[in-house]
Image (cartoon, rainbow, N blue to C red; front, side, top):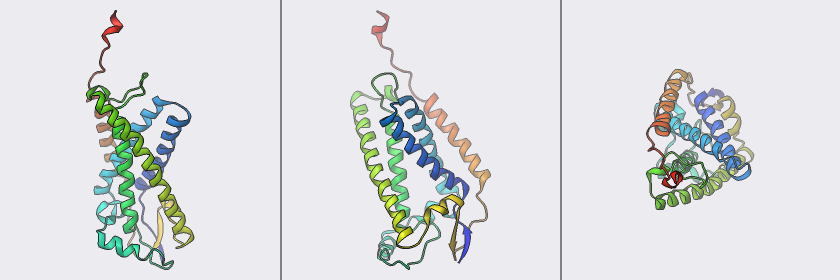
Length: 227
């Protein structure tokens, strides 16, 4: 089989930037106690997710949701080949891996969105902290922490799957996400469509700036501070 370009540059950058953001989010919240940076990196992470959602519809062939989201029948059929070390490798995401991508995107999005409504009870608050009631803040805080615990479990499962494919099926998934090429008989992509990716990045930056800096309500004023 010939090595062909499968993963475009924007998809690869998204993948590794998301990895870096998740690590940074854990460190800033659990190790360094740098909540201000935790919020800032969270906004950047939400921007990444928004870009990936757009790229899932407008991006290159194997980055599109329509290419790797399979129905229950195909997922079940693929699951039956898991114990076969000689099963053919998919050029893009396999039917099970495609749904794992969606699960990870949703978990990160859920954690990021919930973070917009909570604070640290000291000085750092999400931009929509004052837009909701105390009960809603408590709910969002619970979602934020629960989603992260589920996300950690999903990441662990993802890593186990990558190791399984490398050791048992001899399918090296990580190198392909670095250089973009995989040995396959399927057609590769002709380019990474970088101009389109740049346009989407500009749209995402504008949308995130509006959502974080313009749209949120003004912080509530504590009347006691004037007495």
